[in-house]
Length: 261
Image (cartoon, rainbow, N blue to C red; front, side, top):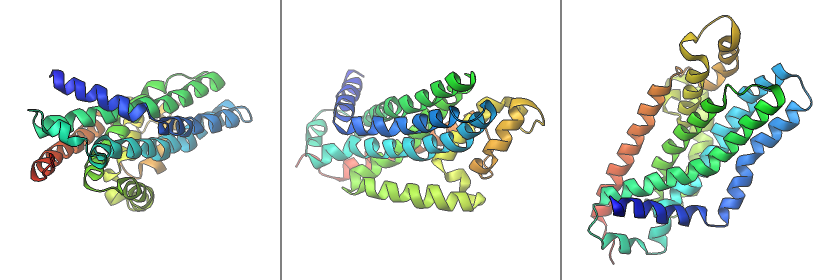
């Protein structure tokens, strides 16, 4: 267990302590900046609507995935590229334990960076319209979205040097176009899993209500969900399943390769 946490600590330093983190933090803050400009020029209702229809998809569908793709690909990919993974392989540690520790570290790094932007957006919403009800929801949605993308990207980062390019292409084509146009496959969209968790928290058991906040959430988020049912636990189970598959796949891949040479 000590080695597990040691790998997490070292990986966090490697991922966050680099200059690229500055650029990612700036990227994470962009939705909050746009929301602030909107909030200063329109009414409270229009600001809340823009938060869900503009800022939220920008956070969960663009900035969070890009950050998770970048950091997730580097968690094991950097070790392989710099040929430092052999130092881990020489230790008496199961490959699955290494993969799990790297996954946790990449997720924490991604959540810290991407979550700062989501938190800032929620702060801007609260400061401009006086509503703080959705801060918890967007943070949970960010945590779910980052885990899903990191789990996929960690495998790609281990396999190929072009993982980030592949990840961005996947984000644009599959997550951005295909799942938005075809509701039959929308449930496979990772960022929509985050949106479904957000909707489940904000609307609660009153999804479909004709009155109040729940009705406004429905109206604002129906297009984003593309037929995906709202719910926190369903989204959590899905991303945890992706994470388990990722760790298992990496365990097999790392055993099949000669990591020491």
